[in-house]
Picture 1 (cartoon, rainbow, N blue to C red):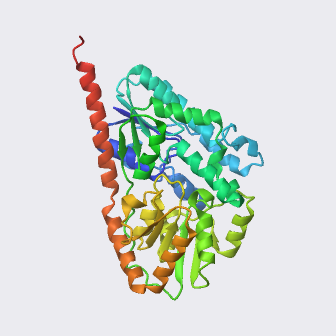
Picture 2 (cartoon, rainbow, N blue to C red; picture 1 turned 120 degrees about the horizontal axis):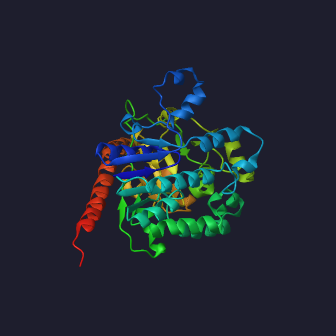
Picture 3 (cartoon, helix red, strand yellow; picture 1 turned 120 degrees about the vertical axis):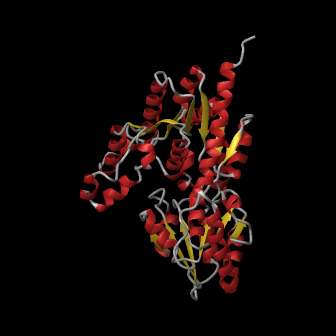
Length: 418
C-alpha cells in the first residue's frame, strides 16, 4: 500500500519503515544498501567495516520488502579512498550523493508504473522528484519528508551569517547548491500533498513557501536511558558539542562563549570538520579536545562523561543529539532554531538561548558552573524528559497520517461520478 524510499537510511528512516511495516501498510521499501548483520560473513569483516555496514541494516520486520540498488552507492563509498575527487564532486560527480539519490528516485518512479498495490508514496527531500511526478500521473498520494527547514529560509540565514562571521563563511556548505538543485527542491515540495517534519521550527520555515499544505510535526524519539545516575559535576564544567563542525551549527558563538569564561570549563568537540581550509576552525580543533568520529554507542558513552551539551544551531531540522544527550543525563543549551522547544522547557532540562548569542551561552554556562544543585536538577530532569520522548509515538503519528491519506484516496476513488 505504501512505497517508501530513502537512499542511505538513518534512524528516523528505519523507524518510518518499521512504523508502516508494523501497521501492515508497507508494500516496498527502496534503498541502496540493505546489510544483514546476521550473515556469517559479517563476523569475518574488520571492525571498522562492520560499523559502517551496520548503519545500512534495517529491522528484521522490514527486510522482506526491501528493494535495493547497491552498485552506485558502493562505488561512492569506495571512491573515498581514490585520489579522484571529481567523482564525488557536489551535485556533478558521477558518484556524488546527489547522483545516488537521483538514480534511486528514477528507479522508484519506474517501479511505480508496475506497482499495482501502491496507494501512497513516501519520499525525502532531494530524492522525490521523479517519484512524485510519476505518482501524480498515476493518481497516488504523495508524502514529503523534510528533514531540515525550507531552503529559502536557510539561504536567508546563511547570507546574514556570511556578513556577521566572514571567517566562517566557507563552512556554510549549504550555499553550494546550484539553481538547478534548488529548483528541484521547489518542485518536489509543490508536487507533494502532505509534509512531515520533526520540529515546529522546521514547520515555521515552510511559511516562506507560499503553499497551503497540511504538515505533520512528528518529533523523533530518544535512545534508551543511560545506565546509572548522571555523573556528578567535577570542579570544572565539562561542555560537549556534537555535530558537524561548521557555522550552520553556530559553532563560532560557542567558541566565543568558552573563550570569555576562563579555565573552569573544558570543551570537547565531537564531529568532523565540514571543510579542510578554514583557519578559525583549524585553530579551534587545536585548542580544544577534538574527536572527529566515534561509533554511536561510544558517542553515548562520551556524552555520559560530560555535564552539558551545547548545540547553538542557526538552522536545524531537529537535532537528535539533544535527545541523545538528555537520555545520558546531560543538561542542554540550544536555540529555538532546533527541535529543542519541542523536547525541553527553558529553565527545566536546560536553556533555550537566542541564535548568535555568545553572551547568553556564556551566562548560562557560568550559572551551571556556580550553581551545582541547579546543574544536577537539570541533568535529572533531562533524563526524565528523554524517557517520555518515544520512537513509538513517532511511529504512531506517521501511521495515523498515512491511514487518513489512504482512506481519503479510497473514498475519492469510490465516490459516484456526477
